[in-house]
Image 1: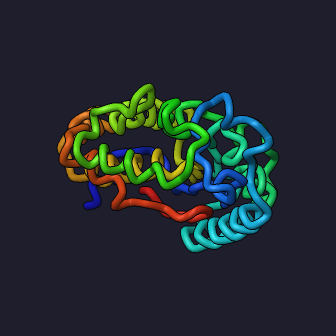
Image 2: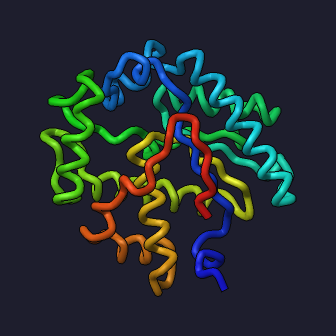
Length: 225
């Protein structure tokens, strides 16, 4: 029996936001202050990616015999993720309000700190090298891998408490979604009593340091569990 069957009470998919204006400009936009600005929402190519992701999600729902009325879209408050979630909701013909769509602050982008904010995307390599060496070490003023996993656990517990037997699309960002997949992959192998306990058992350096193995392209949809 798949151990993930008892891990959660819903089916989950993850979707990284479509190509954004920061992606086009090669900028790191990770603070809440900047992230919610409309200047940093999706680029035209990103809208097209979100539409394709919505269509792909719809096809996967049909294959799994899941009706659209069981879908819930949970998304980060950043403008690029909100924009992506809104486009997907339109494709699915779902109203972009409760109970179908919910903004969850804990799904926000990883904050890389003031040293990296609004700097070149090339700087990501420095952060990921640090992550691989020590996923508990924070970039100056920013969040470590474990910091992000801590709040992602809160987000998962919230969704599990609020929804039952739903198909949940988690619309977030590259680093958080890499980490979410990492801890789920590990949690499925653990022998704990519940989701939170199994995630806690997965919060070790040997697991967290490998999050880049689960990298997603912009607009990429992937089943989680």
